Image (tube, rainbow, N blue to C red; front, top):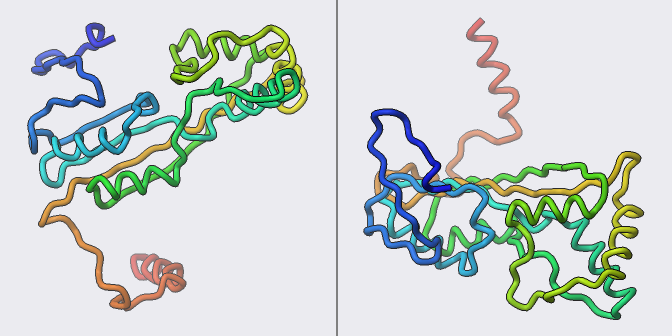
Length: 220
């Protein structure tokens, strides 16, 4: 994929293959770091964020998106219920994912400021659970947990498929949820905007609507 990436003609670009947990950029050398839907594979997320922070210049920005903890909750619960029924226990069949409430805490603890965090949920339809699992395997997004079971028995698969259809089925198949967390975080800098002291505001938030309406009338 790195070799296939093409830049704008005339743009000088350097490609470097590097693991997210072993970043080797110089300190204070980057203006911007972007990451798109790959941070859920990082084991040491605080360590990765800390290294990115060190590589950013003051007032540099880190923009990213990653799959959140509600991703594939339908598949996870169906497999767990099926294993409880057939095996009297559960095993990890979905890779662990970070909750949105944890992202802000990790970014704060690793030295970022002026955080903006948002989330979105995408629902994708499939004929059955099997097409979903096949799709995940083709995306290289199947389970990679160290303690995962090597095989999933056929009776558990059949039971999970039936449970999935019963709980989350529709007339034309099933649905799978992908939660995406988006964030923007800045490396601190002396010349960044600073919040005013608590209690120094001269306008109440409840009056913003009136102020905006008055401003619109004055412009007219």
